[in-house]
Length: 331
Figure 1 (cartoon, rainbow, N blue to C red):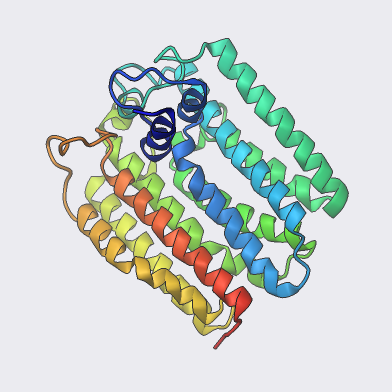
Figure 2: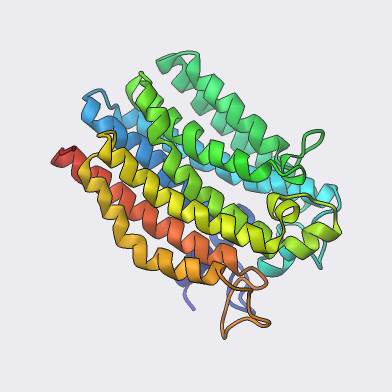
């Protein structure tokens, strides 16, 4: 298998084929869990594309904001792995080390190396934030500090948001209002109220991904007294909530188009309905007892199908906003 194929495999599955030694690029793709970064890109893309019709969009500042958000997400993934290991959550028999190589447990990097990487990425992010603050003012650090606090305290003491049933709502806040509205503000320098409303649908979709992941980890999280929302609600109810979040995403898009906040072209996102129906079907029943042939991220099940939907719907969402920027039409 070529090096490029290894990179693609790492981006798609957070894994490499069995027996393949990671090259430097695929190694960092695995350490940062780069396969989930498209969710951040689409949040930032939505914020930037919503800004284009305003006539105030600054492409350079938007690009810098996207880079900063992607780095922040990568840092967040490494922070979670570090603190979950330090807190005794991540062990060789825990789901995190089974569906993909854990940076430290797999031997890809030492604890000190991971801390150094976290610090290096955050230093670059701080530099970007300082520049954007100089360009746009105090609201940039307000968005950045809020996002950083949620990122760190998602697993770090004393808050440990994930352990208290607050991980899923915090993901909704970060990938919805913080990223979408924050990117819009950086891109334009203004933040009308309607942008907050427009930021909500994609947050629901990303929240579905985390619901799926925590349903997958229900047994191991329960055993470790990690009270994610699925642990609090139970498996069956959590699967229904995940389905409701998917329905809520499409209904919110429809409502925002009907009220003129989104242009009509945003309805292109409904091209992902066949995938959504398939995902709803997956959430309607328990997972199989064994993985399908060549399934790459077992024992995860629900999160994989939810992530594929999020990626596809995010693409159609962005294309609809592009079309609206070129041929604006609202009800």
